[in-house]
Amino acid sequence: MSVPVQARAGRFNAVHVLVFAGALIALGALPFAVYPVFLMKAMCFAIFACAFNLLLGFSGLLSFGHAAFFGSASYLSAYALSAWGLSAELSILFATVSSAALGAVFGAIAIRRQGIYFAMITLALSQMIYFAALQADFTGGEDGIQGVTRNPVFGLIDITDNLSSYYFVAVIFVFAMFAVYRVVHSPFGQVLRAIRESESRAKSLGYHTDQYKLVVFVISAALSGLAGGTKALVVQVASLTDVTWQMSGEVVLMTLLGGMGTVFGPAVGAVLIVTLQNFLNSFGSLVTILIGAIFVVCVMLFRRGILGELQARFGRK
Image (cartoon, rainbow, N blue to C red):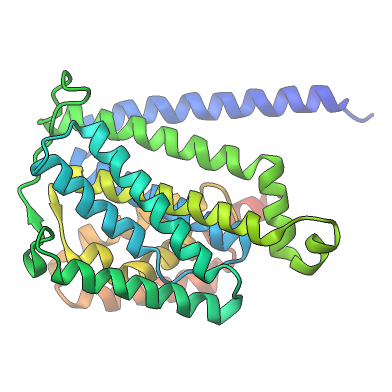
């Protein structure tokens, strides 16, 4: 006998509530077992990977320029904190809004192209941001912006110690993950899936696909900026590493490893990559080769990504 739709929906929502509550409890307890700075960095890259996945996994748009949003936000947040003395939340908000504006510009230029042409345009635009960061006075050139201060949240809450900073970043992380979840599970997200599967069919149904792609591009850029601005606060440095094309490649790796097209798979991939970089750091320049070898093995064993394979095995769509 089949279960009524409302009962199934209620049971499904109850499971989600339990999972969400368990995740919150785990987030609250983790800094007492694991180094908080490592956890904060992992959360920043998890936001970045999930933001990128909105484009690649749900819209079918491969961008090689997302480091532009992540890195520029890192610089802007660091400068606002150190030079202007803005509070932590205002600095990150400023960086996020700036990345959204930059995403609107990039998207307006690139969104009418598809496939490799779209990827190459985003890469070229990203390289322009890299050279601007290299030459601009306020970025510090190759030295970057160092000694970034962790200004109080709302001018009242001190986050100079790692534990208090962790909980501030955890709030941002939860907000970003909820935002990604809502975008994916909304009518807007369903249209994105339709565009990914067949853009011509979506157009025939009356959807203005370029507008949808531009909007998701801006949302993805804004969340990437949120990740970059928060990272500058966490590590207290903004450098050229954040805006290089290698960073754009790294977020692609995180997304594929965790599970492209899954909601939280890229976050799993990001945590795994950050963990590997942390523990393999003693190998120096060989770390890139080791991570590449691990990626090849994972792709051969988990073609849908880690979370994608788990969902497929347990019958989740």
